Image 1: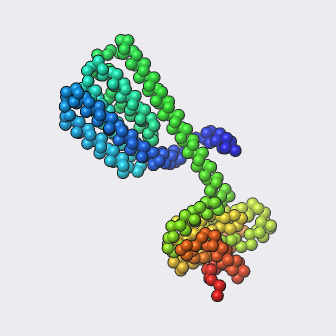
Image 2: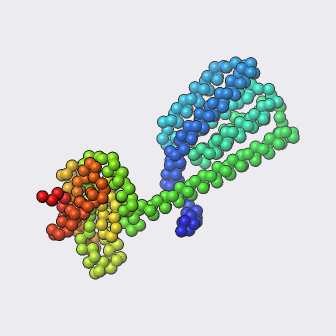
Image 3: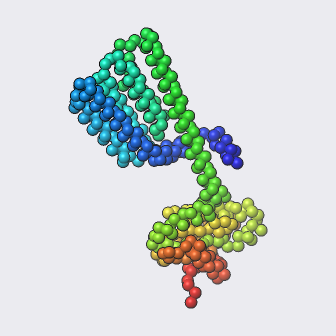
Length: 359
């Protein structure tokens, strides 16, 4: 089963909306890691700057303070960045600043040693960029900026047509190709895994027929809501009146259309609340932040909406409504709502009944 779904997913072309959702999800999940990369990069650059400044006898100049301030400000901005699009731009600014800073530091060491350190700097930056959650255009811009800033042929004695120059060019092509291939493959694998997880979660928590949450999703969300103990919680149980007769007289295809239509009305009128199809012709809604009057208005409006639907094979619904008190379990609330639903069904249907404790 898993391999079949995985093979199907890998053959799909992810739509733009899914890719945007994936990029945002990946950035939110990796934002602490991005902060770590920025902080470690600043620390490494600072250590080498101090070594070159003092052991090289150049001193810690105003440029050093300027770069520390600039890189620190970009890291602080990252702390408050919430959009993956903004991170793409912020990452390019950070790479531009730190590669320029690395260039100035390496300019302070003896000229014969510069090419080696420039190539090491390129390798470090490109590796860091390849594991960050950036889009393709941002990655290739970072690749270009890094090689421009840390060009091993600039301010060195190496010529491209000499042996050492040819070796450096070969290594640069190999490094760029390897990093690019790794980045593209990792991104593709992450996208497939995200898509696969989304498909499996939807199959596990979304009702396939009505396209609304199923019983498993409702129980998990309702339990969490009850633990939060928000004021004004009410649980509604909904049943389609005479649904068995619809199936027997018109067939299960018509019955499925009726279920979809009722689910559509629930989704359209209960936006902001938790709702689900529990199974068969039963649905449930969990309200919060409502008083008794407004909760009854909500379920009464839903009854009217379904009754006034002029589609083929019209139906009505019965609703049992129960208040959820602090400390109540979900099972207890479901029992009370089911008792109120029973009362609604046996008092004429096409109505709602508010649960009342027995005298």
